Length: 237
Image (cartoon, rainbow, N blue to C red; front, side):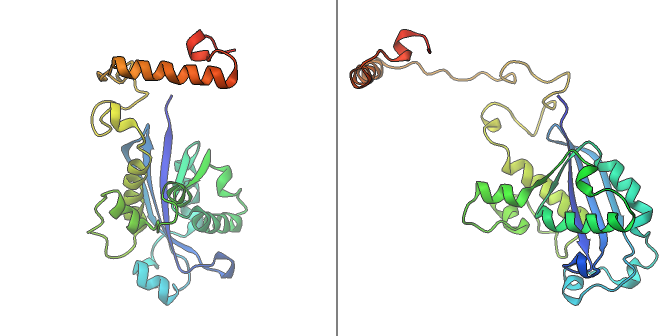
């Protein structure tokens, strides 16, 4: 099965789309079966307004720089086509989706979530995996060994690239026990290794004392439950 994902990030004029803040940059990275395909979408957008001072300090995109860039209406169809039928990964998704929905509403278009298969909040995922810890993108880069040394200002495409690497590291799970995720054909491709991904797994046979301890445990379970354990009978009723 082919799994298509889009890692998405935006930069905005401020923090509140309800007060008129707009999207000024969008960056998207395509993943297929957990591998980057090389396809990206990156657009600067003219918001027709100034950025808030705090936001400008973060992204550095001035009104003058954005003056000759397309308006959101001119790139909306391209964005929606790029994310169509994909699972979209966004860090702190509620923020970006609120801005995307506001832009689409101005154009009388359906909400962003209806254009893609699903939206996954990688911040919520990071909180589940790292409870009680900070989970900003910078912190996650450090935690999972993703270099962000070249990141002086926030940029939508750069942040999407960093998030793609963080997401792959964060969701790697037990894959690293049996396959090398950094080489070889993608899982799901026609040339993907079969069985256990082509790797020989070490099988450890129990020693005699370990088998005896296991039998003693089953005896104790039988006495406590007054019935033979299913492991000994070989059936699961």
